[in-house]
Length: 216
Image (cartoon, rainbow, N blue to C red; front, side, top):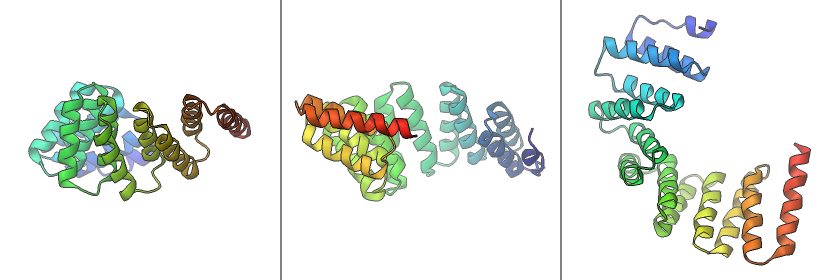
C-alpha cells in the first residue's frame, strides 16, 4: 500500500471508500475492491460504496460483478445518474445495447446536462445502427460540451456509416481542430475522402498524419 493510501483514516465507511478511491487511482484494483467491500460490511446500505465497487470491477474486467454492484447502488439510491451511466457502459461492453440505451436514457432523465450520458447513448445508437438517434445524442453532447473531440469524431462515424460523407468530413474537421494531434480523426478524414473519390485530398491528409506522428 502506498504512503498516500496508508495516511487515510479507515475507521469509518467513508474512510474505507476514500482508501478504495486512492487505491483505484494507483491501479491497485484488488485493494480497492477489498476496501469497498469492507465499507459495505460496515454499512450495507451505502450506495456510494457499491457504485465505486462497480467501477473497480469494471476496471478489473469483471462485468457481471460490476452489474451486481451497480444495480445494488441503484436499488439504494435510484436517482444517482453516475450509477446508471456506469451500468450502461457495462451493458455496451457486453453487446446488450437495448439495456444500455434504456439505462443511459434513465441517466439523462436524472441529469439532462450530463454530456457523458448523451455521448455514451450516441455510441450505443451507432453500434445499433440507428443514425437519427445517434446524431441527436451526439449533437446534444456537443451542445453541452462543444470541445468534446470524441463526440465530433463519432458524429462523423455515424454519418460515414450511412454514406453521408460530406457531413462526416465536416464533423472530422471539427474534431481535428479541437485535437489536432489525434491521428484517428485524420484517418477517418482520409477514409471519407477516399470513399468520395477525392484522392488528392486523401493523400494530403495521409501525409499530414504521417508527419504529425513523426514529430511526436
